[in-house]
Length: 199
Image (cartoon, rainbow, N blue to C red; front, side):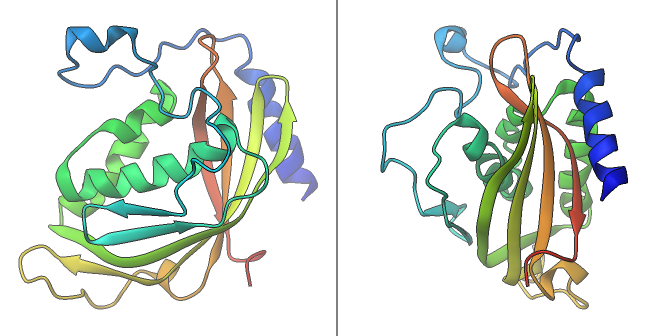
């Protein structure tokens, strides 16, 4: 635990002075320049958060929201749903939620499915979502991810692949390191996960 805390502190301090350019979506229309670069940039009104996010008509992401409602809390659920949308449709909106230095790794994660002609269907639960720490412009988010009712399927046959990923056997703890960039928007810097903390 001490090693994780020290590592978090080093990551947060290391990136505080960097000027990071926000992600620009492919083929963005000129009129969109005045719009926010991140859907979670502003604090929404109370009660506006969807409890269920429909992803491509095949996947439901059910979110158990904490009382806190701000851009930082919404960061991971928005990214998670849009990353699966990218697997299904090729949409790259999910990249606006990550720092440019992490965009390649995030895109590789999507290509890991599309390259194998795989997609997903079913239901995912996100719960115990909390902001564990905020240090200056860095933060750590923890969220439990339950993919036990989600299936990875072949896009060729529509059938579930075998074996299913190990992550589908039990809920796991997703640890998200985030950084608030010079434009005031929180973006994901890195991920890690643990098998403990969500039983």
